[in-house]
Length: 284
Image 1 (tube, rainbow, N blue to C red):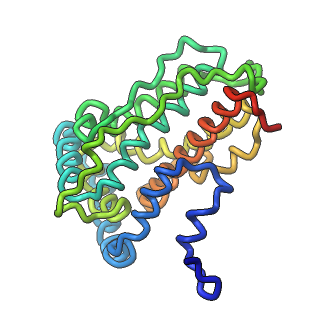
Image 2: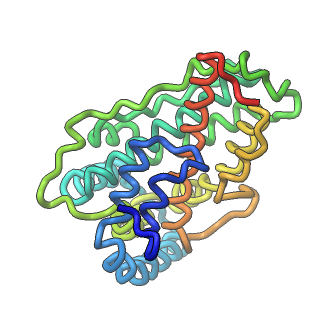
C-alpha cells in the first residue's frame, strides 16, 4: 500500500512514466536500488576505489611503456559478473549493448549515408562479452560517428510515417541469465566501483581515454535523434554532454550509470514511436 503520510521514493519511481522506460528494465533497476549493499558498502568502497583509479590513471600516463590485456580484462569481467554480480545488474549491462546499438543503427538508417556499417553488438549472454567486448563497444560508436560525418546536409526532421525502424531489434537475453547463484550479491553500482580501476589498468592510456570520453557522445546521439524525429525534448535526456570537453576518471561511476539510463530511455522512446507508427496512432 502507498503511504501518503510517509511516501516511498521507489513507489513513485514505479508509477512515474514521464520519461520513457521499458518496464522490464525499470524492474531490474528498482531491484538494484533496493540492494542493501548500494546504501552501505558502495559508499564505503567508492572513496578507496576512486583513489586507486586515479593513481592507476596517472601511472599509465607517466610510464612510457604502454600495455593492454584485452582477453584478460574481458575474461575477468565475465567471471566477476557470472559469480558475484546480481542477475538484474548483469541483464542491465547486456541490455545496454542492445540499446546503444539500436540508437546508432536508427541514426544510420535515417541518414543520407545508409552505407555506414551498422552496429552488431547484441550479446545474449555474459560469455558473449569475450567477443562483443567493452573495448569494441567504444570502437563501434566512434567509427559510426566518423563515417556519418556532418549532419548539415541531412533532410531532418523526417515525417514520422517515413521513419525507418528496420534496424531496431527487440532485446533478447538468454533465459539462463535470470538464474541466481548464492554468491551473486553485488548490485550494479557497487560492482562498477570494485572493477573500475582494473578496467583502467588493463587498457592502454589512449584506450581508456577513449572509453571514458565516449560517454560524452550521448549528447551527439540525443541531438541527432531529436532532429530526425522532430522531438527537441530528446536532447534533454543526455546527462553526459559536450564531447569537446574531455573528462578524467572522477565521477566516472555516475557518468557510467547515466549513460546506461540514457540509452534505455531513448531506446524505449523509439520502441514506443515505432509502435505508434505501426498502429497509425501518431502523436503530434
